[in-house]
Length: 78
Image (spheres, rainbow, N blue to C red):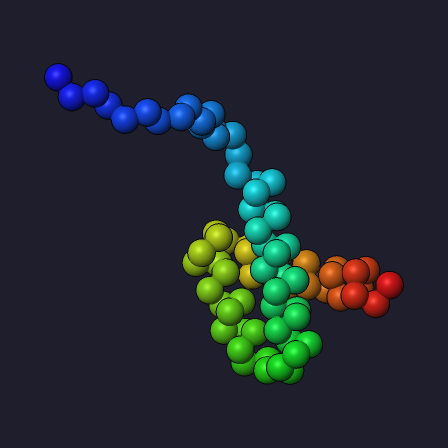
């Protein structure tokens, strides 16, 4: 009989993914805002934003744009 290797037990996440999604999208917003501030390349930022809906679901692009506005207004120029 072959002994199985030890695997630690981790709790499975069965709840909604909305809090995690919010944190991920806010991180993308900060990253894209920094990219915009450094390069001033609107096409690059728009290309990255176009992939958000496919990757994170319907409405993700609009959410990231809104988070970018919030970060620029409340975190960068405070």
